[in-house]
Image: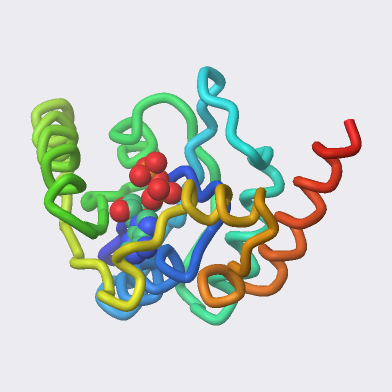
Length: 162
Ligand code: ADP
């Protein structure tokens, strides 16, 4: 059984994330899409909200499990029998950052990291840009699924009303 993890913040999930997870699901037997629960870094969405949106986003793939993790990713891998981390590269700057993390994870645990190149259709896309556009009522319909758009609209409306 070849089991991998696609870890991330998913704040919120975008079509870029769904593309990578779907491609990993074709290559491996089982994919964990794992949301980092970082107590030091609060996102726009809560972890349960991120999990809901991610579950909906990957529902078409039969071999993807959505879950959360905290602490070290390599510990999550060990606990779940995962030997490979799948990350995506959108740009050279992604590579600079990812290389160091991948090497550290290998040193800590022997867990391998496999890089998939981002689909050029989505290589400019990040959750942070989506949040910024949505916050100013811009059109994110080609960047995130409709239920994510709804959640973004509600979240910023709530914030504006506070
Ligand atoms: P992190 O904060 O861990 O980078 P993200 O949620 O931003 O979390 O990303 C999770 C994974 O999804 C990373 O491997 C990232 O490179 C990948 N990813 C993010 N956006 C895209 C995109 N537009 N196209 C392809 N992969 C993406």
